[in-house]
Length: 141
Image (tube, rainbow, N blue to C red; front, side, top):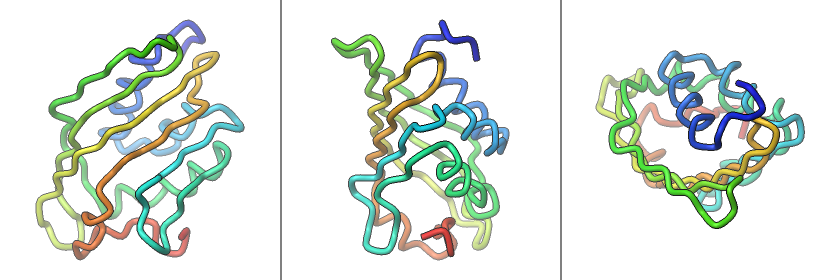
């Protein structure tokens, strides 16, 4: 993505990469030293990933466990800082292992600089990973 891409455009591009199951492309949206934080992560799950390589390792097995089909209800809110957006969305699909539906709501606070994500705080529901087949990070935890 060009460096002049807006934070909202970069975020939407990231959603398209997730739907295409392009985890390398998704991780490539991060700045080399960008972070991904999970303030509500349950015990045993990572709370902070530091750097593009850590994001790539964390996301690498995601499509083998969660088959995303859509991101309905995406709402991107601009903030008083033009580099930061607050995103509300749903991820919908199925759990690969069980075939059960997957439907999760997220709120993310995303900061972008020079066309890359520098900070991504992901407020996802930790209860969702208690479903069989939802534990996609396995040994990366």
